[in-house]
Length: 596
Image (cartoon, rainbow, N blue to C red; front, side, top):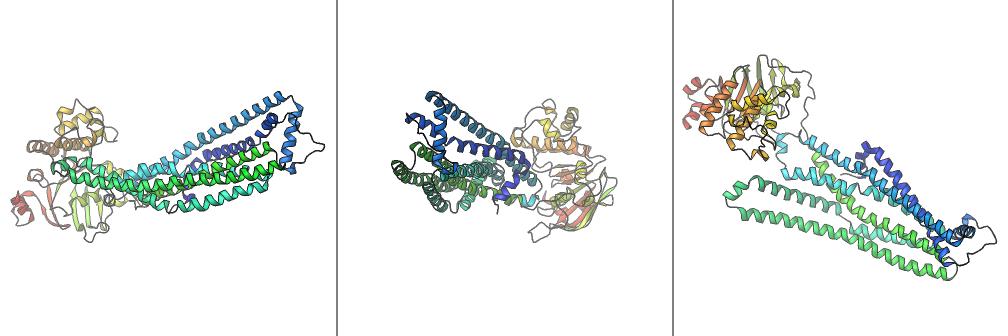
């Protein structure tokens, strides 16, 4: 569970701004307190035709009497109008400095407040791209997006605003209290009554705010997930005619969020009016008691006005504590969700890597390789022994769940083997730099990933050295000649401006453009029609000449030209050989061909 020290720990990189903010807020509090007694000489000049004279020198320890004595000396020194002018100029100067430091406190704290949010998002995103894929799939996309956006912003809105209440407000309250105690200790007792009532009553109102705020953020995550699923699956929603059911499901989530936020805001909004009512009650008692002291001549009216002004300067910061406490609890709930996400186990790459990698010289070997996904009872791969020669094409065949994609994931170093090892030219893959290794690999998945940018940028995909001419050649190999003159055309979000077959072929063009040593294709022709499949298959075969390739496929036309076909069943190799040899054997592969 997060606390204030945990949250403020994120401010360390911005300590200059924090220190500058603290200094500015201290000076703001100083000038706020200094501005309080400035109304005393103004009222003395305004209401007293003949300033009071003293036959003795009043000491500073005499409190209100000393203030009246000091200001009277100033008034007697100057003409009445001149004295009034000097007092007004002094008031203007003090309030100018007060508001200057108010602006500077905001000027300096803004980079820190927003910098913390930036760092939180950066940390979460960096963690996101290292979370194991199987673990990532257990979280809804809407929930992840909410944590990266809404929850992170809540820290800025709710938590870091507490800085103002925790720095400026206490200084203002302390300064005002010192002045009030100096004027009249008895009157000051009423202020403590207000503070006691505020802490007790507002504390009871704000009880369980953190838990309720966390529930609210989780409800918002569910709402975001429902919207994301609706946009993504709109074709299916309409084709299956389930608009009404989905609308009702969304309405239920929306109503749940509505109920939570109304309940939370009602509790929050109750704190302000309650605090104000308590303040006015004490002010009324204070006015009555203070006025009686003025009538008795124990306190000058102008000094009493200054005391009321000081008391008012305490009420506002005191009220800010109630809203600050609400924001603090609400922000802690958001930070808890961020911390919960950041605590997910990440996949540590290259923790023991010592070997750089240039190229594949001879072969990749799988030695007694086994792999089991976390929290799964059954092994995805079991005792795999296989050798892949450089320049050869290997086809992986088998039913869904037989371990084909798991084998590719291990080659890509998305996971670490449970047992056994993978060797590249005699070097264990775990000891090869992941960054260097992946430079020599290209992957084409069954569901092609395209981002909202131009065709050219999708082909480059962050790789250097791929110029427009290279991109055009890759498009031709992937049977997309018509787009060679449209490199700057946008593909739309998730490639929605292209057909399914065009998206798949663009993904193939991206893979071929980097001239990889090892080409991994997971159902690369699954979205193509018969004509496009034939053309792309021919292009892939030509592109794979002299290059190692592993293809996962179910179509006979795609796998029959492979140098070796490996048949997997239940995570184990049950057959391997060429198409001609396996087709004659009475086994899984021949049954597979007969089904087609």
